[in-house]
Length: 298
Image (cartoon, rainbow, N blue to C red):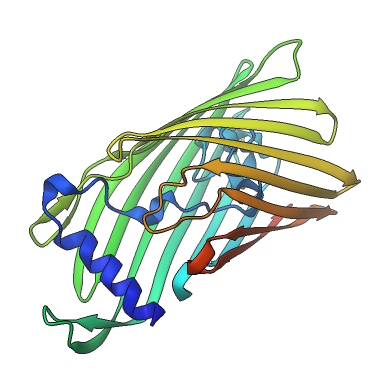
């Protein structure tokens, strides 16, 4: 039943008139990092190291050593969302290069004809490969990501290219960091005769370090083609050294068909350069989404 409902949703997105659509490549709206998820996606100013890929490429310059990150989510309606990334500091002071791969898969799904009769099963996937360059310039961090996006459903394929831009800066003399990012600025995705713009978004965020180990963050985001604004708030509390509890609220998550209340929660553990983060997000009748992220630095 879930697979049937999912294919109705997917196919509807590609069969509506152009003027009724907002943006395509919806999988790009899904979070890639459990820490960010558990803080309600309030991550534009807080993003750092390999975990910044997908939020604010400027944060990649915070990596002091080689970082690897892997993330997996059991997404709604039996789908899966995965991410893998690497950040590598260069000999040039302050310069860090990185790469990220995001993949969303639905597995086998049941098709339906115009008379709603059952048809053959088929699979679909979406993926994006990003190359990132970030650098510290004075007290600021700057970042640029170039990515190739590909999607396939029932043998039909679409692709696009895009860039992400980012900036973050810790304010001198204040426990505040501000961040700005532009995501998915690029070409449209075209399936057969249907052409959809990428989910272009503009984000501004602030992070307030109350005391060491306690962070408050807030993001304002504008999804341009979806004509949608959202506000997210997140908190992070270091209970013990290396262990943190997190919670967040995201108003209007921008994913069609999801009617969660915007709440999320999670925890993180970091020992000896190895970190594991967990996040939980309820989506009501569609089920719950759980994400786990593993990171290591060497």
